[in-house]
Amino acid sequence: MSLKSQMLKGILEGCILAVINESPTYGYELYVKLSGRGMDTVSEGSIYPVLLRLQKEGLIQGKMKESTSGPNRKYYTLTPAGENALEQFSLEWTKLSTSVNSIFKGGKTSDSQGIDRD
Image 1 (tube, helix red, strand yellow):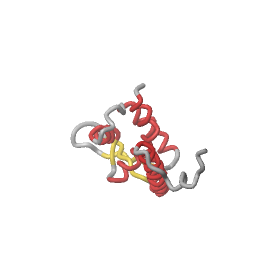
Image 2 (image 1 turned 90 degrees about the vertical axis):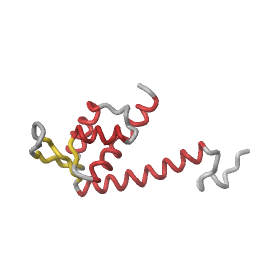
Image 3 (image 1 turned 30 degrees about the horizontal axis):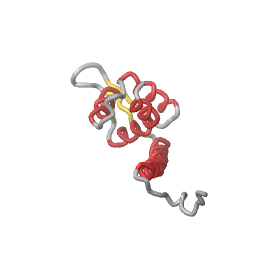
């Protein structure tokens, strides 16, 4: 598994919640949207287990709808608990990405200021 794949695996759940939050989405469409946003190493097969887990956890709900081009599709939407989970993920991601960016740029975060390095 590539380094990019390993990193994406850790954030896939939050990204799926964010895409579903934009509009009701079915599995393959979710895969296409994620791939189109640079998550091209995420396989279609890895998305469905996450959707199942999110549904079991009550973060998303699925509703079957007719399709004009093929079989019926299950469209997923966020539940109120899913909206809360997305908000929490977003807050945690912002903190983490700020810290990582600071480290790579050689800067200091407010937590590291005042630490004696002797």
